[in-house]
Length: 229
View 1 (cartoon, helix red, strand yellow):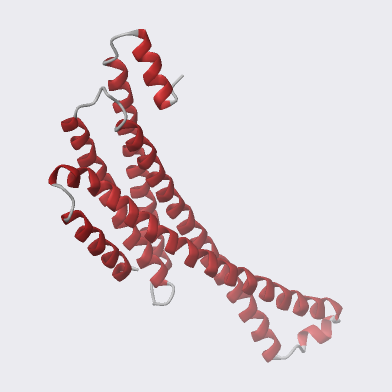
View 2 (cartoon, helix red, strand yellow; view 1 turned 30 degrees about the horizontal axis):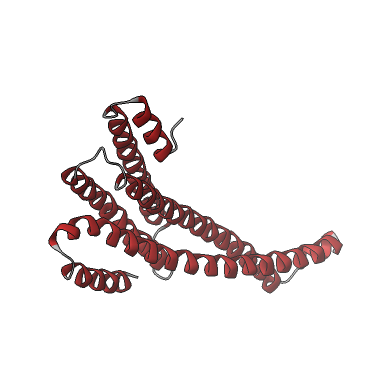
């Protein structure tokens, strides 16, 4: 995933160097947003595939465990006591594996929630930025400043892709559950902060535009543009 992000970043950086200087600054957040969107889509597809596999494995383990439980329920007390060690070990392994699989499913579902929040962050940026560029109450230098703020927020969000990738890789390495949970919680907190910061920035800009409206007609036009009550 990290290599994939670097390739995307390189290709977009090359395209930006060909753009006029005045357009480059405004294009940076859009380029980062594209990288995030492409990387998140890739993560979500991988997570969905893994969840499907894990859910299928859960069903198989539950059926195997249920079959052993049915055998146990039909046995008499003496037969249960004489149950072979091999069968006892098999039952124990099914139970432990089922518990482990359910735990991993919970982790993957949490990862999916985090990445979905990043999708909403990019959507929020794209929607707001498209409107601000239409708003005549903002100067070119103010729009350039907005682009810098968006670039900062989106760059922070991009870092979470690598954190999520680290979590996914942890399932094939010896990482303690406590450490994995720590990384997941940190990624979730950071995405939440990025999302809240973006929404607050958008809201402040909308209010600023309203304050600059000179007539009631202007006020109504701005409210209509941003979908404000």
